[in-house]
Amino acid sequence: MAESNRRGEDAAAEHVDDVFDDAVDDDALTDEDAAVGGGRGTATKARPVTDGKGARAAKKADATEKVGFFGRIGRFVREVVAELRKVIWPTRNELLTYTAVVLLFVTAIMAIVTGLDYLYAKGVLFVFGDHNAK
Image (cartoon, rainbow, N blue to C red; front, side, top):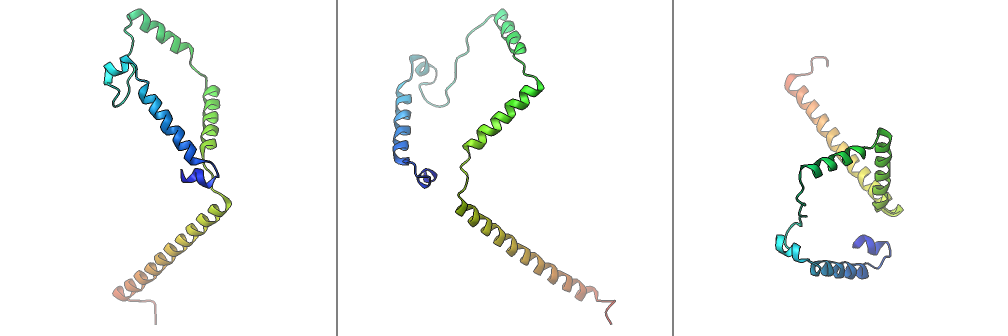
């Protein structure tokens, strides 16, 4: 919701719509839903009882709907594009702030590792001696 306010959308009205839709969905339980799970928990769909012939026909229908290699690649690309449209991209100001924070953090960690490396090197030379120095 904070993202919506930042983008200038009316988040309060959107929240009211979501709550109203949820309330309508909860009231719309059918008798079958109430009998199966009482309207609580995960909803499950009852499977129709079929004989052996119906199962074979369903398998044949699935076999004819197989998609080729290029069809799968095309579907993958369409799904990637759809997911990228859902992303909330940072503003320029946010991007610069995040970049600065990352660079400062990496620089600080690099300084710590460099200092520890120098201290360990001096410690090893102290313990084992410096045979090349005169």
